[in-house]
Amino acid sequence: MYIYYLVAVIIVALDQWTKWLVVNNMELGERIPLLDPTFALLSHRNRGAAWGMLEGQIWLFSIVTVIVIAGILYYFHKEAKGKPLFQLSLMILLGGAIGNFIDRLYLGEVVDFIDVLIPIINYDFPIFNIADAALTIGVVMVMIVLFLEEKREKKTGE
Image 1: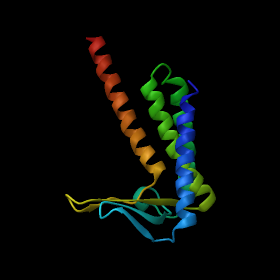
Image 2 (image 1 turned 120 degrees about the vertical axis):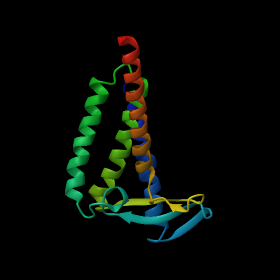
Image 3 (image 1 turned 30 degrees about the vertical axis):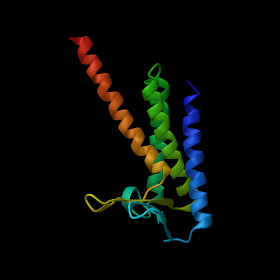
């Protein structure tokens, strides 16, 4: 069961390492095209939540993050036992939550650097980082797990 914690540790380590590389090797606002114009590295800082909402509310994000981390740990130990996909999704969420929490605690802002343009619809996706990606993937996985569990319960309940 505790091997799943390794997933969270790897996500936090990768997230913090990539952010360290950006902070120490790029100027704020500097853009490095990788697959121009679709994919680039762009040194950016976010003092808010997703997409810069509620900028400057570090205390609020800190409280919410502690509650979220406690909830993830509760569900991991109480509700996800024997459910590997659920356990994995929760640890992916945990890694993402801790990654951005570290930034807020030590920097007062989150380091973002992945810039994606979707040319088909000409949409410049908000700049994000590894922790943000982990949070998104984790949420989608939890939704899938819950959907499959509900479907299974309906099937066995009929």
